[in-house]
Image (cartoon, rainbow, N blue to C red):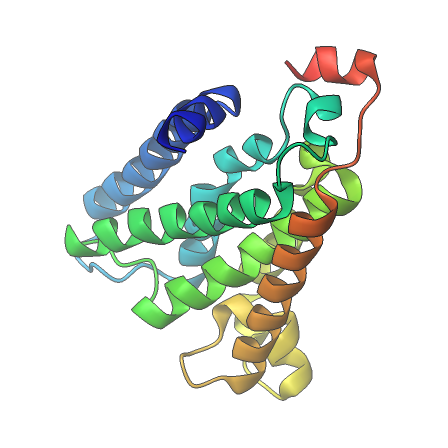
Length: 205
């Protein structure tokens, strides 16, 4: 199992993707610390960096050989689920380390809640449109929230639209994040990414 995991990580280029995520978070934290003495970053920056920690990991959700992963020789659903959970755990770990080093991208609960919701959204995108376009909805939705941070306070509707910006006590944001996480985990685990044509697979390599 350990040898399979190592081979799987290499085939999905996980080491390089994790390195890119770590560098992205480190650069964001370093720039903020240079510009401000306050360890707590603004909410709009925090949600952007949260997505930045996950973005380099999105391409790893699809392999180079779609035909291989469509075989029943291996139980792929639990492996896909573990992959998505690992992406969530890695992103949360990076942001937690940044907080320990003096740059807080949200409270501990916000980091976990937003990470879970974004990971689920990415999983949904990967299962429905493929890993190459899985970034689209998370980036657009996060961008809308970052630009409209001043309008985040309000009723349930605004709490759902601006869920990443909500304080720890927002039940609506927590429920939406949980729903996205569960839906994305189940959909990606069961369905995986859509099969690509040989030409598309070659371009993606």
